[in-house]
Length: 467
Image 1: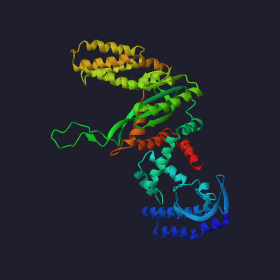
Image 2: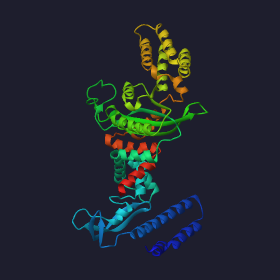
Image 3: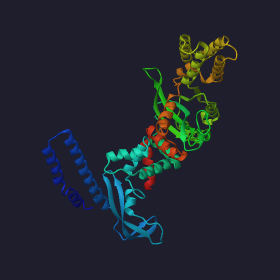
Image 4: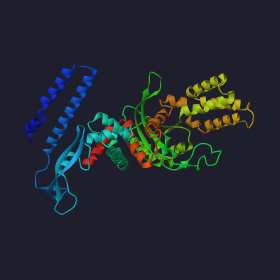
């Protein structure tokens, strides 16, 4: 490489250009307006130098031989081919040699191969910026943001292609990505309690559904009962490692977590397969003092938890805050809404459920006592009966004082928060409707970002592009 010649070519004229910037600032004087103008001009100059340096340097690595070996075949130079690449400094045009195999077939551009730019328009760093931004923003927002930050923003089509490529890789190569996570970003080794949770979050699908609301009273106001949007439940799961109790509130400290998410599907089948595979690998490779499953009261969830072999022997915990909501309904039904007695009774038994080994049974006994005072077949009595039935059916999963004494959390707050942040904040915005495939592409990327394992995922993706 002719390094000296490259440097001389890049620096040629730079002193004069920079001198002009400084003189202009000196002439106008420093003010907020001239300061911004100087920044803009300096940025433009540095980007210009960046483009020149990029082209001059990378072009030196183009193949010059007339005949090369590639993929076990002999290729001959056919022509120079020009291609536009988008770099952080702006768009550049690169001239590269194109080689064709003697036996016919797909040709090769050695410079593209050496740079990892085969079938690429954006440089890999810009691709990552697009994919990473897609975990938080829609393509139009990414384009507008980059238009403010870069000399030239990628087009919406280019951004969407990156999302499709990266999210599609995560989907099609889930086992490869998971293996990389296990090797390079395993869950924290410091904690000895493994806690698993899963739940659902409705998302708007680009599929026909039932229109919400009451039917129209006058004919012709609304045609039909179908809506172009249907809401169905995406699945979200968390795999968390907990350590010692906090000195502040006495609750177990969550040290690390992995997030998983799938677009709506019957029985959350794919989510469960992935989740159970992650848990199984953890149980094989390390020992835990406690393994727990914490979820809300859906019967389908507990059917899965009790039947899956990987959860056999795990402590099953009904989310305490879900239980407290039922207790609150019973308090209102017994004493009346906004009643001081209802508030006191609820707080007393909520605390007893947490602190006393028989606290949940005590709450059931109290509800049965007050139920006798309510009119038969009344709505209030039916509510109390329903809460009693719910508590009785989940009694083994509501031993909260025992769970806390074992250093286990009793709330599914992390997975509920994940439903909001992973799915809700990104897929449930005003006017959004998703195809199942398109939504999954985004969830694949966002889950790695929120799990703080983006770098491992992107490294694995890049390796696949240059292999």
